[in-house]
Length: 255
Image (cartoon, rainbow, N blue to C red; front, side):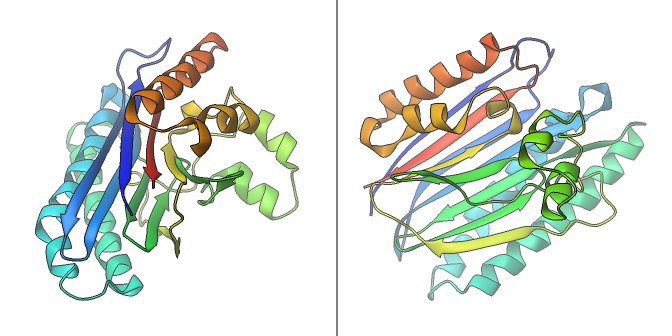
């Protein structure tokens, strides 16, 4: 399995800073090429959201260099990776909370994290950034940790009502602003000739799933230039429709 990657982020139309942080890397390991990707959507007073999101990205970057090589000495077990990622998020939750208190503010960040090996995907989610798998359809892998998603799951609200509800961005938890964090983990077999996409909520509010699929299906994305161009077109479409948030998307194409 080989990988082509792209990453795009935009400050948007109204905010003074871009509080999103993201990173994607193709890595050579004893178990073959892998791709690691992370996207964090920061929030907080005094424009500190970018500090929270960048801190989590840096922590996982350290994991790539310090822990992943050892993990790859034997076949990766789901529970081992889950334990390591949960340890990182617990420590980051504590550090960001302490730093925010020292600055007289609260700050936090979502996180969607993905490792693609030659055979398997490993995805962790906290908050409402998302991971998708795009093949002959657009499939959402993660589940939003939001008030409206919980209400839909409980049958108290329809999906259409949730999309229009003013509370749609209210998070049930995020790293740095929750007493404790409980990541959701998702595991599955990786597919060839597929797109694995991570995005912040600012990328998806003002465009439809059909519009995302039209631009980002594997059949039209053959190289990083096309991936970047189509991602930028969707970002600009969001801005034309008055999306107020920062807008970020990264993609990995398998072949």
